[in-house]
Image (cartoon, rainbow, N blue to C red; front, side, top):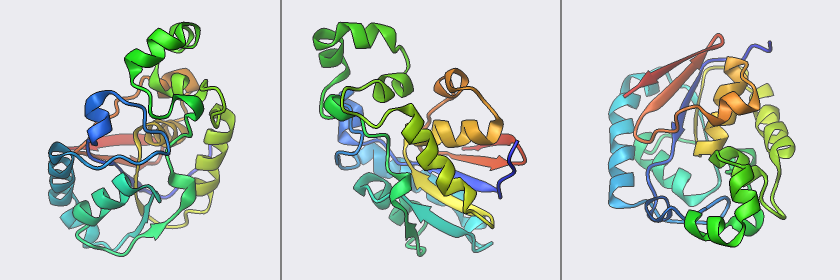
Length: 190
């Protein structure tokens, strides 16, 4: 198993579309008031971590950048396009009930969000998504903070933990917390 430097992973706070159960993928949706509260919770947890001056990376998507601004107190971040959420193709912008009603075969065959996004017609697919995340992780040389997205976090955490795709899809996907990844293990700070 490949070894990576310590990673503090933060999922963005709740967005308006999260609250509507609408698939964002690489589309934009603003943080909800609850989402800004999630980022403030992360800011409390991040204070002692930021004192160590880790390198900070953020997805180019607005919800992650707004979360980083709040949670990291304006610390300098490197925007890396490899940290964008999975591109969910034709499903982007649809609500989960709309997917279930309009694409029942895809819905039935893909019970997890990770599988659903990766099965999306005209989407990125799991292989490309996994490769993109791994390519980012392989260039990390020092302890790093990553502010990104739920499915990206499940795959990144799964890579560190040595999990299968099915196991990755079952990982928790919380907001307002920090997942600490180190030496093949995960710790949740909340």
